[in-house]
Image (cartoon, rainbow, N blue to C red):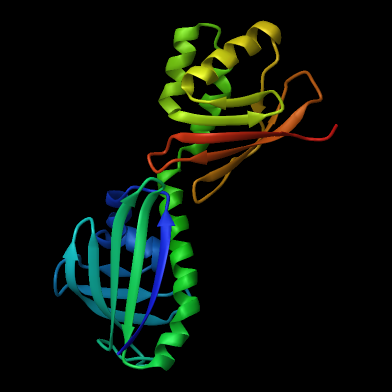
Length: 248
């Protein structure tokens, strides 16, 4: 036997990530339409790739939300027949979200080598699929962010920021170098005092990839525009914002 291993970190909590091994709809979102999984020992594993290639196997063991192991092979028998390899995926919580450790055991090195790039690709696809669910409301959170900067009442503004941002949020732009909600709220209040009527409004769609989002903005009635880069934590809260002003 020979094996390949790969470790990645996904911006989501382990219970969220593990649902993709127990729910056929989510499993299919990862692998391809028609793919299914029966989340029990002996349950069928079926993968239908977008190009029509089919793989099948059976669950060997499952320990939610920490580990799953299943056999895997191709219906065609090439490059390996059903039951001839074993995939083990383990999950553990880390500050950034979930560390995923994959081990795929093969009967021969040729089949292993054929899967190195495949798993590199599939785990990046997996991270994106999970992130698309976890951060599906990123546009709404970003709109709340911009709106909070327009609230004059200190208490209401603090509540609005706390609803969407982590306690240790970091903010950097041409006028900000902030750490923490208290610092953020005080700075936003000062901006309202010294720059009344000047505020940013999102323009266009939010672009999000694996917990990092880009939002274009304009200052209504002015020529100033820019891009804010948002990073989100595994709980969906904003962890940092970096603001970039477009050249005039």
